[in-house]
Amino acid sequence: MTDPNTVLVAAVSPWLWLDLALHLMLFLLVSLHCLRTRRESTSALLWIFMAWSFPLIGAGLYFIFGINRMPRKAWRKQRADSEFLAERQAREDEALPMVYWQAVHEALAAEPDDPDAREINGAMDHLLPNHPLLGGNRIRPLVDGDEAYPSMLEAIRRARHHVHLQSFIIRNDAVGREFLDLLAQKARDGITVRVLYDQFGSTGAVISRLFSCYRHVPNLHICGWTQANAFKRQFQINLRNHRKILVVDGQEAFFGGINLHSENVTQPGRPAIRDYHFAVQGPIVQELQYSFLRDWYFMTDEDPEILLQKTHFPHVPAMGSAQARLVNSGPTPDEMENIADVLFECLVSARKQLLVVTPYFVPPQDILHAFRTAASRGVDVRLVVPEDNNHFYAGLAGKALYEEMLAAGIRIFERQPPFMHAKALIMDDKLALVGSANVDVRSLRLNYETNLLVFDTESVNALKRIVLADIAQSREINLPTWQTRPAFHRLLENFCHLLMPVL
Image (cartoon, rainbow, N blue to C red; front, side):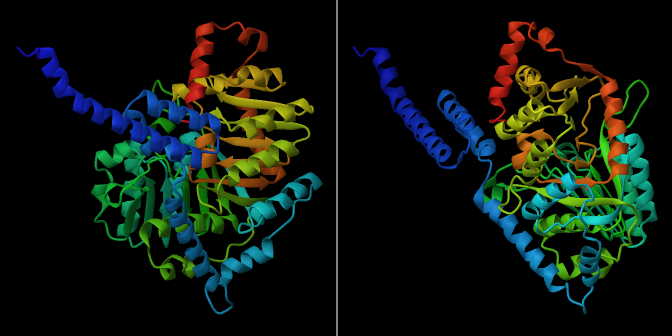
């Protein structure tokens, strides 16, 4: 008589061997890819560990999230950027409309008056050769959606030719619909409107079909940014467009950290998310316009003859005293880690004070080292982060760094609720680095980001007053007290920080 257990084993074994073989094959593929492409050993080891410990699932997660830089995608964006640059340069001729844009650059390119700022700007000439320092700008900080949204909506109402809007998040709520309704109204009035949203950041609006409601409005063109397409065997959702830019008639612009959703405005019983945005006038508007149009061209292939028309780049007179330089960053060969390099340069050049505001503080090791060395040479380094983080694991990962930073002399301030989403760096009261980028690995290495490097006493002091007000609403972390926190907290913080290269 045949043993039933023997029959069962005989029936199951082939599937077990198949699963094991598949697991080993995927593990080896992940390991080989990590060894060939990962630049940080911690990240590589974590992904290899996950691929081994979680059969099929670990490899699947790596396939979707872990391949941070897919060369073909980076080169496609790089190729599109180069094509668009060539089209622009072809129009920078005395007989063609883009002479306006060229003349602005040549006439208003400037050097900072301060020697230290001039030295930093010299380094930027090598890092950012295609984005010169432009003078004659007015840059006005706007705090929260309570200040930013009314100014942005009023600018849209004044539009006479075009409106270009780019946002990481557009939510299907009162704010998102208010903006889209106004843009649709302007489009019906004959104004050309282009809207570029990130499909990952705006997932809720995509699922609820918010944008579909506006697809057939004449003159209103809406496009979702993504570098993932199952039909083209592109599964990378890690490369996100985190920029927030609004350009109206090529004359005025807004940029910074504020997305479009209702949590950014004060409501009964609920304060607005704390965030910084900036209203801009002057020649630097041309750079923000070009940044938007370059991304738009990559996603839509719209004719450069239309995108680079004279009305998109009108002659812009000097509007203020601010000197500003565009700092774009993204996972393309020309712009990879640009913002990280500029941030590093600011940290190592500081002599007196560094004020840094960020919602997520999980920097690469070189940036972290630059923070510590700045404090060790006597710079007053103050870091402002939210007390309550909207991504708990990112908040905990940042806390894992507190002890070594406090020991180095860095002062850490946790801003009391509401959640603080602001991003800014002020160095020695001489310059500010502001925009969409956080001080974390995702912003500095993966996302497409837009910042401005600003040299202007008036603008920097206005921003500093805002940052000092946030510090006044913060709780300073004390090293001896911090060291007494429960051991469980330490374990959880270290675990979340360990996973950040994966996430």
